[in-house]
Image 1 (spheres, rainbow, N blue to C red):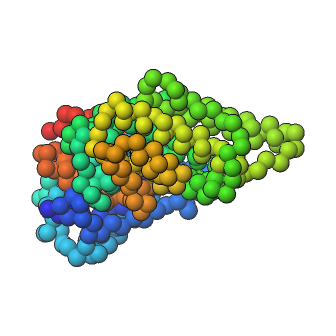
Image 2 (tube, rainbow, N blue to C red; image 1 turned 180 degrees about the vertical axis):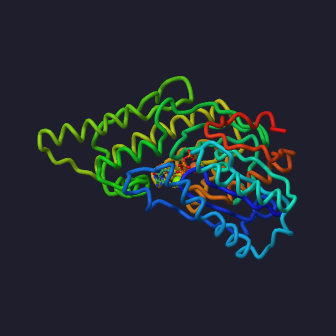
Image 3 (tube, rainbow, N blue to C red; image 1 turned 45 degrees about the horizontal axis):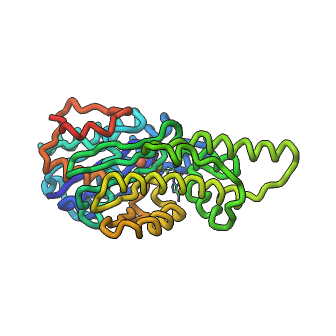
Length: 340
Ligand code: ATP
Ligand code: MG
Ligand code: FE
């Protein structure tokens, strides 16, 4: 099978061609980060405009690089949620147009299922599996008893992990998106500040990062007021340690309750070096569970992962028609009952 896939949920316009759900023939990603940086975050109207400008070129490049034509395609897959509604609409509209014009089946894909299926592009996912999805808008532990079944067993009650990185980054004077620079800064510092680890010992799989974010901001502001100079690298290291502690502790607890063959670390924050190292070490206590760290190049938003999830859904008979709409608040559990 050859799937042409679309991703436009946030600030990356991406089109890919995926063969049999596991081979990337092309994966064109046009990022808009520069246009949003001066605003300190993604501006929805600006994002939509960029998607419109970029998408046709991305389709052409994806087909050309994959050396395929529309006639070779089996189906079209597209992210229809969650994300920014105006941004999602561009991808959904483009995908519908291509599907309609070339008489191809249309497959609706949940963006988070896409993040998880990035792992499938490296090695087939083995079930039961668990995924820790950490991104700009989400922090979720997803249990997958079998293919095409996704159960959220834990999620953040407030800020997402990536969102916390971006917000504390701003206080450190770092441009959006701050995750990677803060990660790098953390590796030059030491864990000297005692930041809170919310819900770490609670008997559930949920997360909370807003208290940590506030504690960080208060510490910096208080130091400013008394004209005290704090070591930024130490601040970053202490923040990162708190995030990584909670994420890995909760994941380990989840794995004790839900024994799985595979643990997948996915989403933009999965690129975090501290988190990758810590999970790698922690997983030694689970010799029967394979750890799959999504490769750095596929952690951020891209259409390849949407194509991988799209092929799986295609095999399960999931289809959309021309009435498909963007669903900005799409819940993850939808996949339990395939849409008809
Ligand atoms: P969602 O997937 O929840 O809809 P999104 O698509 O905007 O949100 P992604 O593109 O998956 O999010 O991830 C972007 C986030 O990842 C940003 O918040 C960014 O700061 C963060 N990030 C990227 N690299 C790192 C890193 N090395 N360490 C920590 N965070 C990182
Ligand atoms: Mg992004
Ligand atoms: Fe994402």
